[in-house]
Image 1: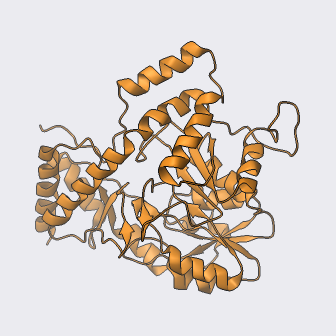
Image 2: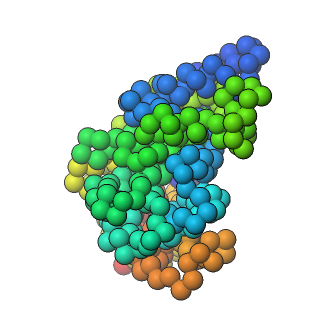
Length: 365
């Protein structure tokens, strides 16, 4: 039997292990100099000129970013339903109401027309997700936000290095959050990074992550314990030196799949967009689940389904969206499959993925 090709694979090497050992030997394990260095290096690499604040998870990053931006009870924030639940959860955790809008079918990101139709007198802001590594329609969303006098935030959990017309994701909103979970394009083991538009938001995020204090025992506000450890930051700093080459490999792998897959709808890239392929997501119109099962059982090729249940139908978030109809979200939830595209794939792996998809597609035709 051929070896299983997983849909995602974290890459942790000797350099990351050495960095962790260095921190352990130093005796400074909690938030310290490694975190401060990681924050500066992250900003310099991805969003120059904007301050970064490291936290213990991507969800914490969204939650604290929203709080630091002034979101709270009585507010509404428009978000996609076709994404991981953390996006809507983070809004709800502030006491605000997540309002779910539909996606447009090509990029799987927020449909500006659906966003505009969702605005009410309580709308505080819009938080698109740069889903699968493709940037959302930020120019159109910025125009809507400016027209209505509301704010723009970014869930960039899956979009390290993505850009639109040369502008990096993370540079459009009051804040952006990048996830550092193990399966993301780079990892710190676990963690998140808030990138803020200005120092005021960044300082509030720093207070919120550390019990409301910048100086020990001088608590200014009620806060959380959402700090990143120096252990995690040390891993992230090493990964930061590798993510550029990994992104290039992901893009090359995606180009190979684009050129050779048959019988499925490959992911288009919008004009002016730089896609970093956190996931390579295709559509299968008929019997998606059978397609996934056949890839594994007949060809030992893994595939992911992100996300089979839209947020507005989850038991946790459905109460915020009674009777809501989001047809493109529902269609995507029925049809999407994410194929392996990660940097660990060999040419032999890519050939096998193409052969498997084309065989299963042909069999189902």
